[in-house]
Image (tube, rainbow, N blue to C red; front, top):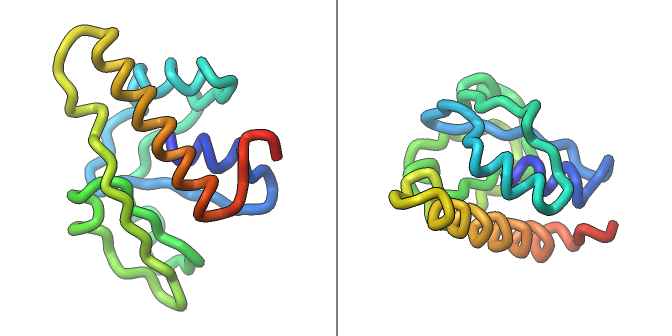
Length: 123
C-alpha cells in the first residue's frame, strides 16, 4: 500500500521501490481499499528485498517490526526510517473486520508519508 500511495501522491518527484523480507502476494484486501481511494495496485507484485541488494537509496522505510529487524543495510547515505504499523494481513476475522484494519493502516501510512515527504493526494 505504501508503494501505491507514494507513487500516486508524489508523482514523478520520487522514485519508489517496494519489497518485503517475506514477500507473498499483494493482498486482495489491499487492492480493494486502495481502489476505494482511486489507486490501482492490482498490477503490483510482492518483491523480495534481496532483489534490491547493492542498490543505493536515499530512504529505506520499514513499516513493521519484523521488517525493521531483518532489513539489510543498503550502501551509501541511506536514511533508515521505521514506522511500526499493525500488519493488516495478520488480522483474523470476517471480511469487513479485515477491510477495516486495511483501511485504517492505509490511512496511517498515507498520513506518515505526507508528513515525511511534504506531499498530499492533491499534488
